[in-house]
Every structure is written in structure tokens, then in C-alpha cells.
Image (cartoon, rainbow over all chains, first blue to last red; front, side):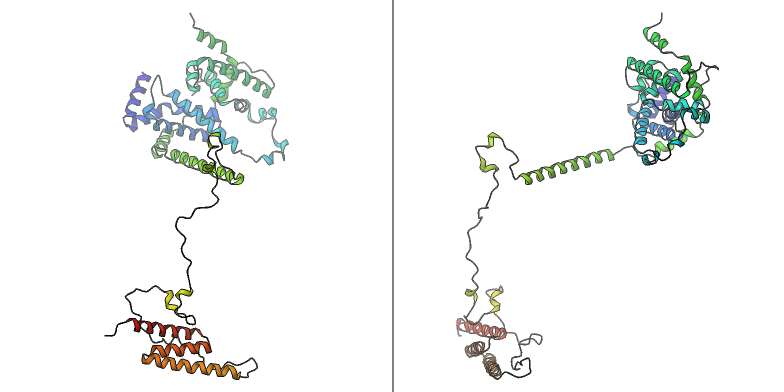
Length: 196
Length: 231
């Protein structure tokens, strides 16, 4: 059983076994990284955030419980770190505010973005307009197809709170996508792929 | 039978949105397996310091800074208004406790002012050594004048701006010089009384600091001679 194996590794890591902790990292690093990447839409920042998340886990190793899995704790830490990262982005914008007025026509319209970057980039841009908790909720529920209990653990709220957040995020995201694409969200053309 | 939670999840289900999101991230190369990520993470984890003591120091620094700023602000307000910091009815009966003292009471009895004249051995003669602290058992030895402490040259008559020598002044200088010479001779012979008289007359004729010093020394030696019992 995976849970049993994780619990055994966690117990060994808590006794100071660094190899056991490395096994835990190996077990969860892909999902933590994917979560960070989807929240931030930046692979370099996601790598840093992923490392920082496991560092926090190592520093709080004695407090960790495999009940049922440490992945919820890891995703929650990653989400809080992502919030800090986004705050830093707001405080340190990529371009000067004075430069915005100089070339407004250079910024592509949403319609142009569709042609230039494709539908995937538009959806990512629409996701970035959601709050981080809404983003987490909608990605976990619709993309990863996780149950509401798990989403509630990661968000740090009750199941009802997670449900309302999923509901609100779904409507906001659909409205944003429709505004950007100028059409209803198309029905799936292919079977669901395997998501990491 | 489906639970309420399952029903709620069914109600939220949106296959179109699920397909759109899966299509968005399915072919993202960033999400592919990255070899060596576990090693990178472990290197980062093991090389980072485990404790974060800066948090405590930072908190301490902020607290100290805030306290200092608050104290400075209070002081500024207090000095600006010149009012007592606490004003409440319970202090109204004892205004002296909060009032600013206007004068500080003396901590010791006033002393007699320093009397310069009393330290002078003679009305016309001042002894500079009286200003220095001396042990009561130490006897004052007369030191010959050192070469770098030559007395003022008083034998040379002064000249006016046009080069002519004033005759009256020349006479005074000569008289004082003669008296000084006589005083020095008497002093060298141990006749301090004569030396003192000669120096005093010289000072009356032409007052110079050197004459004062010499007369004072002679008078002091005379007093010691009188006080010392002859044996």
C-alpha cells in the first residue's frame, strides 16, 4: 500500500534518515511541481517554489503526519508560498508603470492572442485572473479530478467552503474564457489525457 | 445510494471545462518528468540552514525601534507643550509632584569666595608659588635661573619710534637695574631682608614680573629663616 509505504518512509525520515526523506521527495515532487507551475505559470519560479516547499517539510518534519498523506500539507504550503510569490510580483512589476502609456497599441488584443499563442495560452491567462485559492480549487476539481475533501484540506477550509469556491471559480473562469475566445467553451473533441 | 457529497460533486461536474483544462496542460513540456529534480531539491534542502534565527532578531529589532520612536515622540510632545505628562484629579492635590522645579536647592553650604589678596605675601609683591600646592614638610630650594628662563633685559633703554632715547625713562631703568643687582647680591649672600627691600624698591621704580618674583622669593626665605629656630 502506498499509504503504508509513505508512513514508513516518514517515520524513518523523522528518525533522521535522509534517504527516506529523499524517497518522499521522489514520491511527491512531480505533483508539487505541477501544482506550483499551474498556479504561477512559470517553470523557473515553480522549481524554486517546489524546492522551498520541501525545505519547509524538512524543517517541520517532526510535525508532519501521513494522515492520510503528506501531499495535502505539501500542496497547502506550496499554495501559501505561491501567494507570497505573487505579492512580490505585484510589488515588483516586470515593466515600469511610466512605460505603459507609451505603446498601448503594441499590446495584443485577446483575439490576437488566440492566433498568436493558441487556445492554451488564453486559458492560462484567464486562470491567472482568478484568485489563487480559486485557481487551486478549479484546477484540483476539474483538471486533477480530486474530491472536495482533498481540496478542502489543501485550501484549509471546510468541504462546503471548497464547494462554493469551486462553483464560483468555475463561473468566473468560463466567463473569462468566453470573453477571450468570443465563443462558448467547446465540447471535448478527444478523450481525457493522462495528467501528471 | 449516493451521499449528499457525491451529489454535490456531480452538480459541479463540467465535462467541457475539464476537457478544456486538460487540453491546456496536457502537452505542456514544463510538466514533463524532469530528471534530477529530486537530487536538486535534496541538495537545496540539505544546504539550507535548518533554523531561522533572523526571525527573532528581526522581531527584536522592530520592537526596539518602535519603542525608541514612541519615546522620542512623547519627549517631543512633552517639550513642545511644557506640560506634565499625567494630569488627573488624583494629582491635583499635590501639584508640587508634577510641577517642574524652577531652582535646585543647594546641596552644601556656600563657601567663602576665593580670596586672591589673602594669598599675596605683600601688598606690592606677589608670590606665584603660592598658587601651587606644596607639601607642608617640603622646604623650598632656591634654584638658579635656567638659561632658557632669562629675566627681562631691563638694562637696555627703550627707544621711541623716531630712534631717540627717552632720558627720564633711561634713568628709571638704570635705577631699577641697580636695585635689582643689589638685591641679587644680598640674596646670594643670604641677606634676604636686604634683598627683599632692594627688590621692593626696584618694583616701585619700575614694576616688572621678574622683580615681583624675586622679591616674593626673598620674602619667603626671610619668613622661613625667622620661623626656623636657631640651633
